[in-house]
Length: 219
Image (cartoon, rainbow, N blue to C red):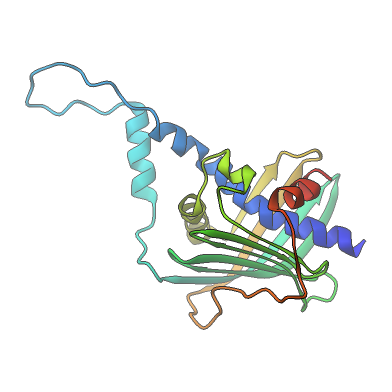
């Protein structure tokens, strides 16, 4: 049962990245739609179409953040699948243009870290501390991200916007058995005294990210 809880907790970490993919997909689609130029002589700027206005609004809503800015928060993650809820606590730490780090603790003991996801511009690190395994890959090799044209910047934009505008957000993730993911943030701050990049012990075994993701989400 404990391993089941841990598996779902790590699935939640992975799913967070895919939530960002789905939430930003509309913006990506809008960026690919280019209005054909018209041949006309005028001194008045042509009015913007609906998609251009939506794009401008999205850009305007993005927070203006300086590289190196820190964001820290406690996070409570509740995962619902097949009518059953599993909740655990953890931390969310971010340093703009450097790293996004989410760690979850054991839902029973409450202190021991059981899983961690660390996203940086060129690397995706996922650590399963219970089963002593980890994934270290890039966005090209992570099929679930590559097929959606998702990179670090896309995920970073999503996380910073969500974390700053609200203390709670929920999503339903399509899977073999749908997963509802609910996040509650508290104790928000900007502490800088934390380790931004995790070193993995030689006791851990490296695993393929696509196989790990598939086995968790398609349970």
